[in-house]
Length: 203
Length: 101
Image: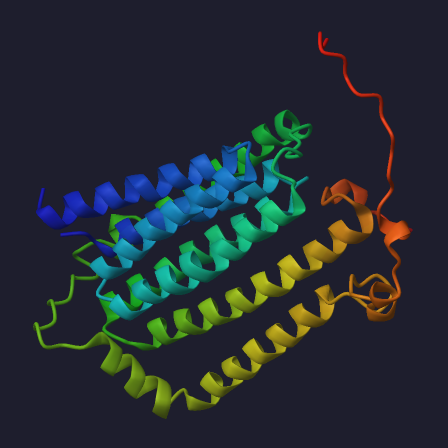
Protein backbone atom coordinates (compact mmCIF):
# COMPACT_ATOMS: atom_id res chain seq x y z
CA UNK A 1 0.00 0.00 0.00
CA UNK A 2 1.58 3.23 -1.11
CA UNK A 3 1.69 6.36 1.01
CA UNK A 4 -0.80 8.05 -1.32
CA UNK A 5 -3.30 5.30 -0.62
CA UNK A 6 -2.76 5.54 3.13
CA UNK A 7 -3.37 9.30 3.03
CA UNK A 8 -6.43 8.84 0.82
CA UNK A 9 -8.02 6.22 3.08
CA UNK A 10 -7.24 8.26 6.20
CA UNK A 11 -8.89 11.37 4.73
CA UNK A 12 -11.82 9.37 3.36
CA UNK A 13 -12.39 7.81 6.76
CA UNK A 14 -12.62 11.22 8.40
CA UNK A 15 -14.81 12.60 5.62
CA UNK A 16 -17.30 9.74 5.95
CA UNK A 17 -17.14 9.62 9.75
CA UNK A 18 -17.74 13.34 10.15
CA UNK A 19 -20.58 13.25 7.62
CA UNK A 20 -22.26 10.45 9.55
CA UNK A 21 -21.71 12.30 12.82
CA UNK A 22 -23.23 15.39 11.22
CA UNK A 23 -26.47 13.78 10.13
CA UNK A 24 -26.93 11.98 13.45
CA UNK A 25 -25.97 14.95 15.64
CA UNK A 26 -28.76 16.08 17.97
CA UNK A 27 -27.41 19.59 18.34
CA UNK A 28 -27.44 21.73 15.21
CA UNK A 29 -24.30 23.63 16.26
CA UNK A 30 -22.42 20.35 16.68
CA UNK A 31 -23.64 19.28 13.25
CA UNK A 32 -22.10 22.43 11.76
CA UNK A 33 -18.78 21.70 13.45
CA UNK A 34 -18.80 18.13 12.13
CA UNK A 35 -19.51 19.50 8.66
CA UNK A 36 -16.48 21.78 9.06
CA UNK A 37 -14.35 18.70 9.76
CA UNK A 38 -15.85 17.03 6.70
CA UNK A 39 -15.03 20.04 4.53
CA UNK A 40 -11.46 20.05 5.78
CA UNK A 41 -11.12 16.38 4.81
CA UNK A 42 -12.70 17.11 1.42
CA UNK A 43 -10.26 19.98 0.86
CA UNK A 44 -7.34 17.66 1.69
CA UNK A 45 -8.65 15.11 -0.80
CA UNK A 46 -8.87 17.86 -3.41
CA UNK A 47 -5.24 18.78 -2.72
CA UNK A 48 -4.42 15.10 -3.32
CA UNK A 49 -6.10 15.58 -6.71
CA UNK A 50 -3.93 18.66 -7.42
CA UNK A 51 -6.79 21.15 -7.18
CA UNK A 52 -5.07 23.43 -4.70
CA UNK A 53 -6.96 26.62 -5.51
CA UNK A 54 -10.36 25.00 -5.03
CA UNK A 55 -9.24 23.33 -1.81
CA UNK A 56 -8.20 26.69 -0.37
CA UNK A 57 -11.41 28.24 -1.68
CA UNK A 58 -13.46 25.54 0.02
CA UNK A 59 -11.84 26.29 3.35
CA UNK A 60 -11.91 30.08 3.00
CA UNK A 61 -15.39 30.43 1.52
CA UNK A 62 -17.17 27.47 3.04
CA UNK A 63 -15.59 27.04 6.43
CA UNK A 64 -14.73 30.70 6.81
CA UNK A 65 -17.97 32.27 5.60
CA UNK A 66 -20.82 29.86 4.96
CA UNK A 67 -20.38 27.64 8.00
CA UNK A 68 -19.90 30.67 10.25
CA UNK A 69 -23.13 32.06 8.78
CA UNK A 70 -24.82 28.78 9.72
CA UNK A 71 -23.49 29.08 13.27
CA UNK A 72 -24.70 32.68 13.47
CA UNK A 73 -28.19 31.73 12.36
CA UNK A 74 -28.33 28.76 14.75
CA UNK A 75 -27.30 30.91 17.68
CA UNK A 76 -29.51 33.82 16.62
CA UNK A 77 -32.65 31.72 16.24
CA UNK A 78 -31.93 29.75 19.42
CA UNK A 79 -33.10 26.50 17.88
CA UNK A 80 -30.27 24.27 19.00
CA UNK A 81 -32.48 22.77 21.69
CA UNK A 82 -35.51 22.38 19.49
CA UNK A 83 -33.98 19.77 17.22
CA UNK A 84 -36.90 17.45 17.33
CA UNK A 85 -36.44 13.87 16.43
CA UNK A 86 -40.00 12.65 16.32
CA UNK A 87 -39.85 11.35 12.77
CA UNK A 88 -36.40 9.83 13.27
CA UNK A 89 -37.35 6.19 13.75
CA UNK A 90 -40.01 6.26 11.06
CA UNK A 91 -37.80 7.36 8.20
CA UNK A 92 -34.42 5.89 9.13
CA UNK A 93 -35.06 2.37 7.70
CA UNK A 94 -36.39 3.74 4.41
CA UNK A 95 -33.48 6.14 4.12
CA UNK A 96 -30.94 3.40 4.88
CA UNK A 97 -32.49 1.07 2.31
CA UNK A 98 -32.44 3.75 -0.39
CA UNK A 99 -28.87 4.74 0.48
CA UNK A 100 -27.59 1.17 0.49
CA UNK A 101 -29.23 0.43 -2.86
CA UNK A 102 -27.69 3.59 -4.37
CA UNK A 103 -24.25 2.76 -2.94
CA UNK A 104 -24.46 -0.82 -4.28
CA UNK A 105 -25.49 0.36 -7.74
CA UNK A 106 -22.80 3.05 -7.80
CA UNK A 107 -20.15 0.56 -6.71
CA UNK A 108 -21.17 -1.80 -9.50
CA UNK A 109 -21.11 0.95 -12.11
CA UNK A 110 -18.04 2.84 -10.87
CA UNK A 111 -16.01 -0.17 -9.80
CA UNK A 112 -12.50 -1.12 -10.80
CA UNK A 113 -13.68 -2.73 -14.04
CA UNK A 114 -14.77 0.59 -15.53
CA UNK A 115 -12.71 3.23 -13.74
CA UNK A 116 -9.81 1.25 -12.32
CA UNK A 117 -6.16 2.01 -12.93
CA UNK A 118 -6.19 -0.14 -16.10
CA UNK A 119 -9.04 1.80 -17.68
CA UNK A 120 -8.05 5.25 -16.38
CA UNK A 121 -4.33 5.33 -15.58
CA UNK A 122 -3.27 7.87 -13.00
CA UNK A 123 -1.75 10.91 -14.75
CA UNK A 124 1.83 11.92 -14.08
CA UNK A 125 2.29 14.43 -11.27
CA UNK A 126 2.95 17.99 -12.32
CA UNK A 127 6.37 19.55 -11.89
CA UNK A 128 7.12 21.60 -8.80
CA UNK A 129 6.80 24.91 -10.68
CA UNK A 130 3.30 24.06 -11.96
CA UNK A 131 0.74 26.58 -10.79
CA UNK A 132 -2.85 25.42 -10.50
CA UNK A 133 -4.07 29.01 -10.00
CA UNK A 134 -2.40 30.18 -13.22
CA UNK A 135 -3.97 27.38 -15.21
CA UNK A 136 -7.41 28.08 -13.75
CA UNK A 137 -7.08 31.82 -14.26
CA UNK A 138 -6.07 31.37 -17.90
CA UNK A 139 -9.22 29.34 -18.49
CA UNK A 140 -11.44 31.53 -16.34
CA UNK A 141 -10.50 34.86 -17.92
CA UNK A 142 -10.50 33.64 -21.53
CA UNK A 143 -12.86 30.77 -22.26
CA UNK A 144 -15.19 31.18 -19.30
CA UNK A 145 -15.16 34.96 -18.87
CA UNK A 146 -18.88 35.32 -19.60
CA UNK A 147 -19.99 32.72 -17.00
CA UNK A 148 -17.51 34.31 -14.59
CA UNK A 149 -19.23 37.69 -14.88
CA UNK A 150 -22.62 36.03 -14.58
CA UNK A 151 -21.41 34.45 -11.32
CA UNK A 152 -20.46 37.90 -10.06
CA UNK A 153 -23.94 39.22 -10.92
CA UNK A 154 -25.47 36.19 -9.20
CA UNK A 155 -23.57 36.98 -6.01
CA UNK A 156 -24.76 40.61 -6.18
CA UNK A 157 -28.35 39.40 -6.57
CA UNK A 158 -27.86 37.07 -3.60
CA UNK A 159 -26.58 39.94 -1.44
CA UNK A 160 -29.49 42.19 -2.37
CA UNK A 161 -32.05 39.41 -1.95
CA UNK A 162 -30.73 38.32 1.45
CA UNK A 163 -30.62 41.88 2.79
CA UNK A 164 -34.07 42.72 1.40
CA UNK A 165 -35.58 39.60 2.93
CA UNK A 166 -34.37 40.07 6.48
CA UNK A 167 -34.44 43.88 6.56
CA UNK A 168 -37.02 45.03 9.11
CA UNK A 169 -39.68 47.37 7.80
CA UNK A 170 -40.43 50.73 9.41
CA UNK A 171 -43.20 49.20 11.54
CA UNK A 172 -41.26 46.78 13.69
CA UNK A 173 -37.79 48.21 13.44
CA UNK A 174 -36.22 49.13 16.77
CA UNK A 175 -35.02 52.70 16.45
CA UNK A 176 -34.56 55.72 18.69
CA UNK A 177 -37.21 58.38 19.22
CA UNK A 178 -35.09 61.47 19.79
CA UNK A 179 -37.89 63.89 20.80
CA UNK A 180 -39.23 61.43 23.34
CA UNK A 181 -35.76 61.06 24.82
CA UNK A 182 -35.20 64.82 25.03
CA UNK A 183 -38.62 65.59 26.51
CA UNK A 184 -38.44 62.99 29.23
CA UNK A 185 -38.80 64.19 32.85
CA UNK A 186 -37.05 62.71 35.81
CA UNK A 187 -40.31 61.52 37.37
CA UNK A 188 -41.04 59.44 34.27
CA UNK A 189 -37.95 57.36 34.75
CA UNK A 190 -37.18 57.34 38.46
CA UNK A 191 -39.59 56.12 41.10
CA UNK A 192 -38.65 56.77 44.72
CA UNK A 193 -39.88 54.03 46.99
CA UNK A 194 -39.72 54.18 50.73
CA UNK A 195 -38.90 50.86 52.28
CA UNK A 196 -38.54 50.02 55.94
CA UNK A 197 -34.93 49.88 57.09
CA UNK A 198 -33.87 46.44 58.22
CA UNK A 199 -33.44 46.00 61.95
CA UNK A 200 -30.01 45.39 63.43
CA UNK A 201 -30.71 41.72 64.02
CA UNK A 202 -31.27 41.27 60.33
CA UNK A 203 -33.14 38.21 58.99
CA UNK B 1 -1.89 4.42 -6.53
CA UNK B 2 -5.42 5.63 -5.89
CA UNK B 3 -7.65 4.88 -8.84
CA UNK B 4 -10.49 7.01 -10.16
CA UNK B 5 -13.06 4.47 -8.97
CA UNK B 6 -11.91 5.00 -5.36
CA UNK B 7 -12.70 8.71 -5.60
CA UNK B 8 -16.01 8.05 -7.34
CA UNK B 9 -17.10 5.49 -4.75
CA UNK B 10 -16.08 7.84 -1.93
CA UNK B 11 -18.21 10.62 -3.38
CA UNK B 12 -21.16 8.30 -3.93
CA UNK B 13 -20.95 7.24 -0.28
CA UNK B 14 -20.91 10.89 0.80
CA UNK B 15 -23.83 11.59 -1.54
CA UNK B 16 -25.84 8.80 0.08
CA UNK B 17 -25.00 10.03 3.58
CA UNK B 18 -26.37 13.41 2.58
CA UNK B 19 -29.48 11.72 1.20
CA UNK B 20 -30.05 9.77 4.43
CA UNK B 21 -29.56 13.02 6.33
CA UNK B 22 -32.40 14.59 4.33
CA UNK B 23 -34.58 11.55 5.07
CA UNK B 24 -34.06 11.50 8.83
CA UNK B 25 -33.72 15.23 9.56
CA UNK B 26 -36.73 16.37 7.60
CA UNK B 27 -38.16 18.46 10.44
CA UNK B 28 -35.19 20.78 10.76
CA UNK B 29 -34.57 23.03 7.76
CA UNK B 30 -31.10 24.07 8.88
CA UNK B 31 -29.89 20.47 8.86
CA UNK B 32 -31.53 19.96 5.48
CA UNK B 33 -29.45 22.84 4.11
CA UNK B 34 -26.30 21.28 5.56
CA UNK B 35 -27.15 17.94 3.94
CA UNK B 36 -27.48 19.73 0.60
CA UNK B 37 -24.00 21.17 1.22
CA UNK B 38 -22.72 17.65 1.83
CA UNK B 39 -24.25 16.43 -1.43
CA UNK B 40 -22.65 19.35 -3.28
CA UNK B 41 -19.28 18.49 -1.75
CA UNK B 42 -19.66 14.94 -3.07
CA UNK B 43 -20.50 16.21 -6.55
CA UNK B 44 -17.54 18.60 -6.46
CA UNK B 45 -15.20 15.75 -5.51
CA UNK B 46 -16.51 13.86 -8.54
CA UNK B 47 -15.83 16.81 -10.85
CA UNK B 48 -12.31 17.33 -9.49
CA UNK B 49 -11.45 13.62 -9.73
CA UNK B 50 -12.51 13.50 -13.37
CA UNK B 51 -10.69 16.77 -14.04
CA UNK B 52 -7.49 15.29 -12.58
CA UNK B 53 -7.68 11.96 -14.35
CA UNK B 54 -8.70 13.38 -17.74
CA UNK B 55 -6.19 16.25 -17.54
CA UNK B 56 -8.83 18.88 -18.27
CA UNK B 57 -9.29 22.01 -16.15
CA UNK B 58 -12.92 22.51 -17.19
CA UNK B 59 -14.07 20.34 -14.29
CA UNK B 60 -12.35 22.60 -11.80
CA UNK B 61 -13.91 25.67 -13.42
CA UNK B 62 -17.28 24.01 -13.02
CA UNK B 63 -16.61 23.37 -9.32
CA UNK B 64 -15.74 27.05 -8.96
CA UNK B 65 -19.17 28.00 -10.29
CA UNK B 66 -20.89 25.38 -8.13
CA UNK B 67 -19.22 26.90 -5.06
CA UNK B 68 -20.43 30.37 -6.12
CA UNK B 69 -24.01 29.25 -6.65
CA UNK B 70 -24.02 27.24 -3.41
CA UNK B 71 -22.80 30.24 -1.42
CA UNK B 72 -25.59 32.38 -2.91
CA UNK B 73 -28.11 29.62 -2.20
CA UNK B 74 -27.05 29.35 1.44
CA UNK B 75 -27.23 33.12 1.93
CA UNK B 76 -30.76 33.34 0.55
CA UNK B 77 -31.84 30.11 2.26
CA UNK B 78 -30.71 31.31 5.66
CA UNK B 79 -32.39 34.69 5.04
CA UNK B 80 -35.67 32.92 4.27
CA UNK B 81 -35.15 30.78 7.36
CA UNK B 82 -34.69 33.85 9.54
CA UNK B 83 -37.84 35.37 8.07
CA UNK B 84 -39.75 32.13 8.63
CA UNK B 85 -38.63 32.01 12.24
CA UNK B 86 -39.65 35.63 12.73
CA UNK B 87 -43.15 34.98 11.35
CA UNK B 88 -43.85 31.49 12.71
CA UNK B 89 -41.61 31.27 15.76
CA UNK B 90 -40.38 27.88 14.64
CA UNK B 91 -38.41 26.39 11.75
CA UNK B 92 -40.11 23.02 11.87
CA UNK B 93 -41.03 21.91 8.35
CA UNK B 94 -44.35 20.57 9.59
CA UNK B 95 -45.40 24.05 10.76
CA UNK B 96 -44.95 25.57 7.31
CA UNK B 97 -48.11 24.13 5.84
CA UNK B 98 -50.04 27.29 5.02
CA UNK B 99 -49.81 26.61 1.28
CA UNK B 100 -51.49 23.24 1.73
CA UNK B 101 -54.74 23.23 -0.26
